[in-house]
Length: 117
Image 1: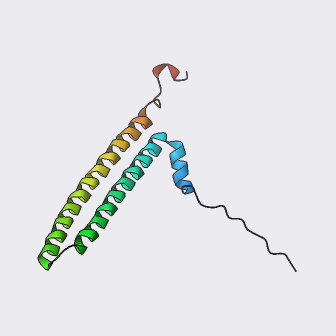
Image 2 (image 1 turned 135 degrees about the vertical axis):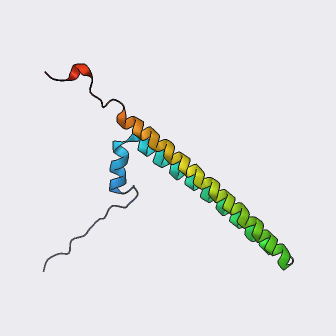
Image 3 (image 1 turned 180 degrees about the vertical axis):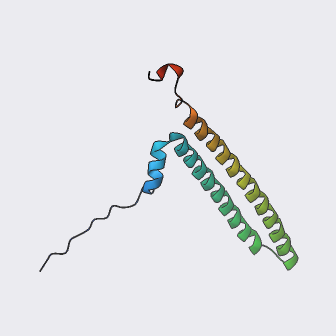
């Protein structure tokens, strides 16, 4: 009887292979990726903290009108914050794309003197 082979799959602690290849090719892209992920984590932690504050405030409400006012203020604030964050992401992406395109164009043109005769 054949012995069963043991497989030792490696833990997946790294980024997916296509992303790793992309990051290795272009360091500007990797910086943009890290910046975007850092900003996303910052925003999510702030929103989570605000959501927890809302729960505490909701438990302190004494009547339905106070509860409705609290919800209205929270939703207005959340929509403003999400709009600002979306704008921030867009600006970060456009800035990164501009840097990546400048990097792609720099140093890749042929000079007049290096044309073979």
